[in-house]
Length: 95
Image 1 (cartoon, rainbow, N blue to C red):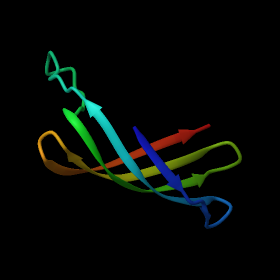
Image 2: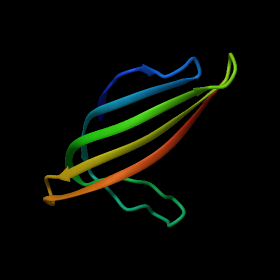
Image 3: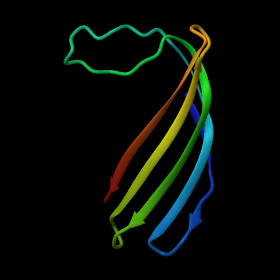
Image 4: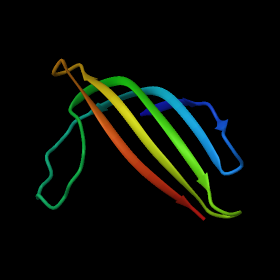
């Protein structure tokens, strides 16, 4: 589960920054996929850590926008006493 706090920063009528920070916490029982064609992500044990993001929304006209969501998660696995980070980049198209 992820919980984040956002701050809206309107740069112009067409560009909005949404810096955010939050906490990731989860309990998983990861099982490897049955075949190599079934890709999935998972974790084993309890993980927790901070998360930082800088969502940016570009409004293109009155009814279309693109939101870019770079995000960094730092996770600590309490079962294996290991930490690791993940950088993700997502895009959302809104009509």
